[in-house]
Each structure stands twice: as structure tokens, then as C-alpha cells.
Length: 219
Ligand code: BG6
Ligand code: MG
Image (cartoon, rainbow, N blue to C red; front, side, top):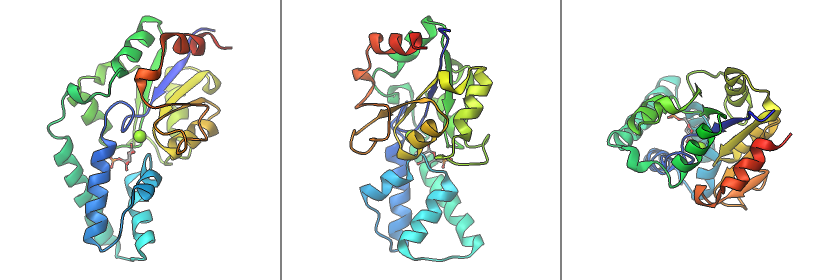
């Protein structure tokens, strides 16, 4: 069958919001007296807000009450929301629309599979909300990436078998989730970071029409 499901992560794949998550987490960590490196940031990509804060506190050996935990989560999100407030479609990453248009022209299933509870807000800001046949985000899942739940629900909503789905991801956790779901995993970013992916591209400029056509026609 030549109808495949193409599932896109949002942050760091469609828009460059990964940098805003980084800035917000770094500020929070530093305010708590905890160092926050680029390497640690890679480990937070794709990871839910709760899990991210747990990891940061763990790295810093800091323990806090549940009330403080909730306050910090809220603070991080307020900070993050202030960054995304002014987003427009100019912040869609280069050549993402080219690939989305091609998939639409070829009548492929197109879904969003994001850990973010802000995903729908962002899609509306960048005028992509109506592009997806299915949207699954942090409000629809109970298990965070690397658990495959988010992608399994996306496949189900597209009505396409997981083995006929292809995932675009910029995070290690997301690639592991796609692999666990038995889907083709395509890393967007650095090859050494995303070494578990089936394919890795620096960005969508490197993804050719031929490559997409091969994925569509693959058995
Ligand atoms: C993922 C990001 O897409 O969403 C993570 O890569 C983020 O960095 C996670 O923590 C949850 O996002 P939000 O917007 O619900 O805090
Ligand atoms: Mg991402």
C-alpha cells in the first residue's frame, strides 16, 4: 500500500522552539545553583515537562517539596510562553513546508506527535494547525517519550499500521520512541547525537523528493 503515515515532532523539527526550552530550563537550573550544559539539554529534548524538572533536580542533587516543584514547572512554562508569544510562520524551519506540501500532494497521512502541552498553541501561531490529519500532544498521552505511546496513538488516529509510519525527530528520546513503535526513525540534527536513528539529516533542505518517494513506495 502506498499510503504511509508521516509523524512530525514539533519542537526542533517544525519550529526552532528547542532553543526556547533550553533558555527557560537553563535559567531555572542556574537560579537553583545548578549547572546546565548542552549535553544535559540533549537529554531533555523530547522529554515531558515533569520528567525534565525531575532530571535537573537530580543532576543538582536538589530536593524540594511538591508545592515548590509545581511552582517551578509553572515558572518555567511562563518563561517559555513569553518566548513563543510573538512567534509567526517565519519561524517554521527551512524546507519543512516543502516536505509537508509534497506529502499532501501525494495523499499521505500527516500527523503531529509532540510531548508538548503547548503544541496546539504553537501550531496556531505558525498557521499549521489545519495541516495535520491528526494531532497528538502532551495533553493526549500518559507516558512520555522514549515510550512509544505518542506515536502509536498518532498511527491509530491516522488509521495506518505502525510499521507503515515514518517519524521525524530531533531528540534521542523521540528516536528511541519511534524505534520502539517499530516505525522508520529519521533524525533531524547531528549524526553523532542521533546515532540510533535509521536516517539522519542536518535539516529538511537535505531531504529530497526522491527520498520521500522511496519511503512512500517501500513495502
Ligand atoms: C518537547 C520538548 O517537545 O516538549 C521538551 O522537546 C519539552 O523540551 C516537552 O520539555 C514538553 O513541553 P511543554 O511545552 O509541555 O513544556
Ligand atoms: Mg523535539
